[in-house]
Image 1 (cartoon, rainbow, N blue to C red):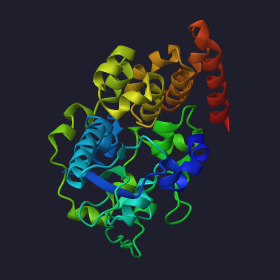
Image 2 (spheres, helix red, strand yellow):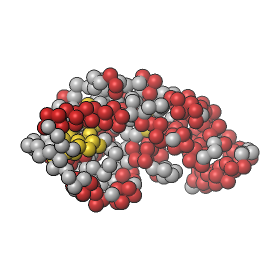
Image 3 (cartoon, helix red, strand yellow):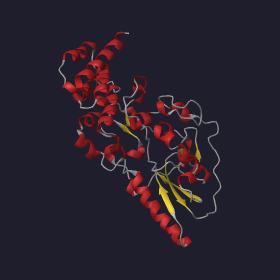
Image 4 (spheres, rainbow, N blue to C red):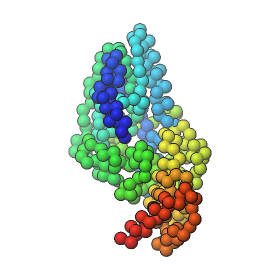
Length: 331
């Protein structure tokens, strides 16, 4: 996440990003859902996809609406300039949203609203107009620490602090390399993102759930079969996740995540679904496939992997991973 350091100067102040800015209008879109968003975690043969990604990419939807609102604002003011941002620039959305009264940054570092709980997608309109500010929101977390305690990888060293290197959302979405072994088991069947700290927030009881047709949940992304996900080729991956945030992940990293989820399933029958990944063009998929098979197959059957023939580009990676797993199993 070097981009955070690279853009620190512009992130420090809105006027560093746009010197003409005099006011910022912050907006939130509710993306909550009815039912338990964590229910899929109890189904080891299914893949868990973060709630925001089970629908059309919110960047496109929200940016269009920000532009409409900005045009209305300028028309009412009789002129002026605006810039709109939805995760597309170094903008400190959450502190700005708290200053604007939308909510407060909870102990999980995400924005919490008394009306919408933790389920808010944020957008910003920068303008050179001088607008009367709203009162900032106060912190209402109190002594609650549910979001901290539920984290599967213990990514919160303290309230209001997140170690992204341990965060499942970072590891399964932003991280471009192999996911460290120390976190793989804790990832469970999460193949894209993690909603645990958001879902347990008590303020969610006031959320009504999203009613936006353009951001409607896609049923096929709610509890997809891990075996079906592992079988997707690149074209199938692009077709299934077209228009969603998952597509930006890319096929190789997605298969990496699916292989880890299958390895955590404790369902030996799924070994047949992950074994083809041993010959995947990308080492990102091949390594976790060996790891998964080491967890699913009996020791003797797993040992036969060393005698199999693999595509030339996969040979070294599979041998290396096999050696690691064999060494670990003997400890």
